[in-house]
Image 1 (tube, rainbow, N blue to C red):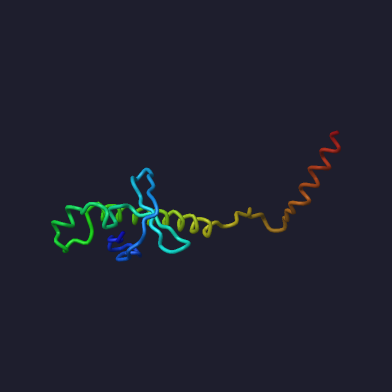
Image 2: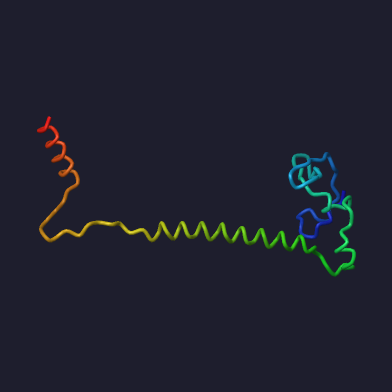
Length: 126
């Protein structure tokens, strides 16, 4: 089978079909790339799939179908949203400042000593 999708990395290569698979997106062809690698490609990306009317009517002028472009837009929007979410988290973490109380001059609070005072007062009550 010849891979015909213009932007697929294996475009123009003739590969052996070793099986078919069905998933929620439809039929997929299992093509053997080499001795160790098998890839899954939709039939419409090969010479086996029926020719798309948009590409036939375009007579070679249109390399992509409208559905391909819309799918590309969805993928780009999803990637941009994921990146914005990740950068927002990083910026939030970077902008956190330690919140220490401001005490009047001469007063020093040692957290360890205050814990010990609480422990001693509990012992006295018991």
